[in-house]
Length: 316
Figure 1: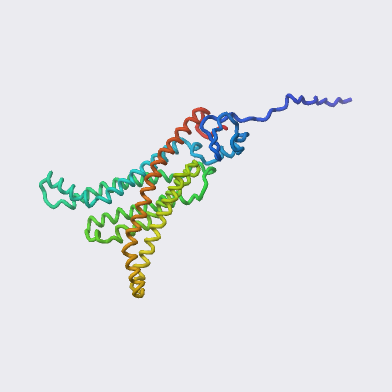
Figure 2: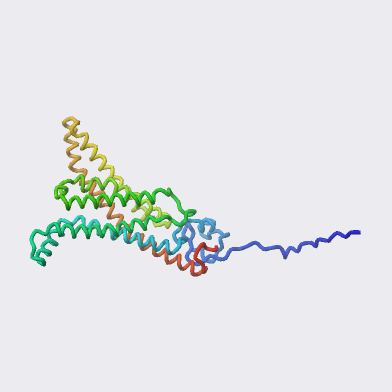
């Protein structure tokens, strides 16, 4: 006679308890209302706005990026800011710097007619500022290591990078032509408008990337400034297109329209430069703030990782 095993009745107290994640460290805030979530678990809800904390942990806030990524991003923002500033200053005041530098060289060497050498030295200085700017653009557009957290179109970063690098390469090439043949000084079209066709859209795309960072950090004022700069960059490019259209179609237009076209050909270059200057001014402010803001995110990221004693990913 076989005796079947008797299964004991399971004790309710011995059933496995649900796994509860560890409490969150300092520095993590709600993605909707910015409430500090320290001490809560990922299964909870924000006490302020009832947003699931799981949503905040899956957000694309920069504090969830690695400190190394944020360090590169901060260096890129700073190099882009000051590289662009120095690049514009040297280019704008080259006509003042060249005779001054030529006079200094002539005084030191007692050799006449050294304008070409002075121009070459100014170009080397300008080229050095361009290298700083290019390096900053490269770092600022590095691939976001958090693909699951990235919002927006992924083509913007590489497009902004290569459009700007190619356009600044064209600009440097044209400056070499200026050194070789002073005739190009009188060609506003070749020195300013051709690079502007590529530079303005490139800055617009780069500012879209920056505006995305500010939007995710709920820095609405700087996000708005970024979008204003995007609009002015696009407007300057549109004026360039109108300029070329009027230049090509002007001889075919009747008298009154030809007068209006001639007036436009005279005013559009000034308006384009004014809009591009506005773009660069706003971009300078936005990028200065970006470097500081990214550095704060890096410090918070390092503090969070030190508290949970991990590098990546976070265990909560």
